[in-house]
Amino acid sequence: MSVSTRDALLKSAEIQLRSKGYAAFSYADLSEEIGIRKASIHHHFPTKENLGIALITQYIDLFSEKLQTIDATQVNPVERLREFAGLFLASANDRLLPLCGALAAEMAALPASLQELGRQLIVTQLSWMEKNLLQAAQVHGKTLAKPAKDCALMLLGALEGASFIDWALGPSSDPLAAFTHILNTLL
View 1 (spheres, rainbow, N blue to C red):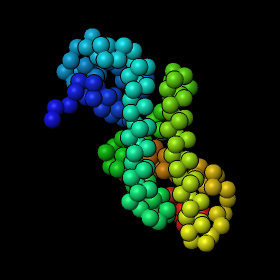
View 2 (cartoon, one colour):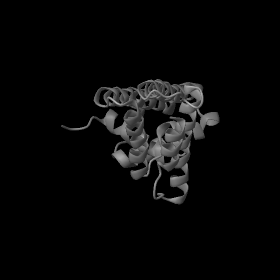
View 3 (tube, rainbow, N blue to C red):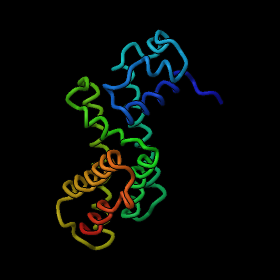
View 4 (cartoon, rainbow, N blue to C red):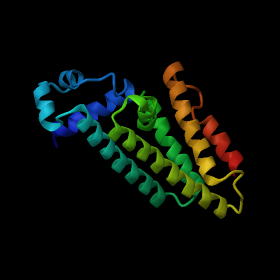
């Protein structure tokens, strides 16, 4: 099955955003990569902000589906959280920053609509993590060392931070070490 031009543009834009940043890529980059004229890109996405909205909205939908799949396939909430961390590892292996981290790094320079979508992506992750942390504590008869919201922030911070450090220094021997340590300590 052939990939539509729109889908190819979204995929290329995602890679550009996650490897260079929103401000650092242009329609000229997409035109060169996809092999179409810039005017054709404007046909699909009149502005870069329109492209960003479509990209982040699609990403949130796909990411939410991944979280639902993890929930459906993993009974143990601790294993759900570990599988979630594996998504960050997969991004690192592809030499891509997590989308939420790439957006957060440029938050002040993004259009307001993209700032809001970036926050929505982060909140989606934190809410999912908080829910699973509470379930993990309940299932294992434990009490979380801190409120679930704070625990989720620590875990996501460890994943995002490790992603940026690996991005800057190259892959570490165990990019999930901080996440694993914090998760084990919290429970």
